[in-house]
Length: 400
Image (cartoon, rainbow, N blue to C red; front, side, top):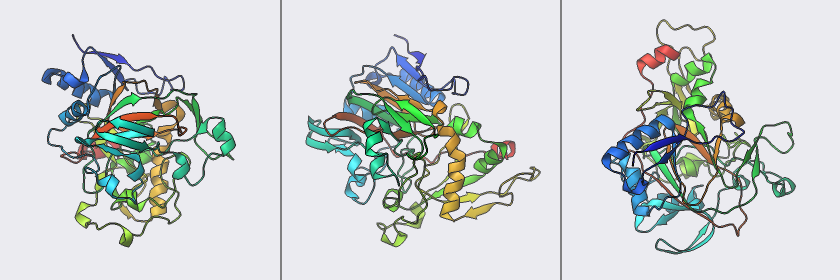
């Protein structure tokens, strides 16, 4: 049976005129755990072209999920944060969220509530990440009871230290609780005029890094194409005492980050400095791919010879070490890309498998579950064998 690609139905909140027409496809006609080499090549091209691939009503073992994920990068081996390392580092903000499948350590069990006798785990207490533990302010209990919630943390799946960002992530929904829809409020409770987004309970929300770059004004396109971001060592430990913005897009600048001297042992050579824009290996498009919470410094190249300096930011280049300025600049560039009309909030069904291009999209956990709402997902991504490719000299000339 031939592979069929059908457009993913967009939510009514999506802006039909602004949303990337290539974004998202549902795959029919194949079993993702039993792909032939020829079928996989089709899937690989489709993933880089469309960003997200959805398979409905899939039976998938942890072993099959690992094999499928690894096919995108055959030289990759360990989980994206290092096998078991997030669980062994108790200061990391990722520590409570992940449970490793014992016989396939590259696959993580995530979700909410108590899960028993699951793939070699006698029991696992899962906790759905919530803005209530990470944001500077939280939705009031009264509004929470009305279904008001927030994005948790917009991010790329990546350790951002030592390990390279994975090429692809696979998410497999095993137990999906039902419940009323929730309303994401982008800003604080005292700003009723702020943007909102209606989402299914427990959605995973995605935005296109390509669109995030495309909608920037010329002066910010120029800045993005010339800039790299340097992440903090052990960024998930570094950021743990700090608190996030209400839209989940970065950290409030209060100086609460853990001092570098108090981090686990780290090496300068393992700190990640990555371009802001990552080049798509199939389409050649540039995607704005920054994890704003872990960013510590920005390194801006000067304008190329012959480029107009009118209105240009940092035309002579700059190494920006002021953390407040770093966060202000990144937020100004990324915030338009998470506008309600550009967000795809996936409405999970049991046995859904979602593959997404981790080097082309940002995503976030959304919402909150009650303790008795049991949710169990398998997640797999693998630390890549290469670093993301940034803009070429021709790209810099074109956009600077």
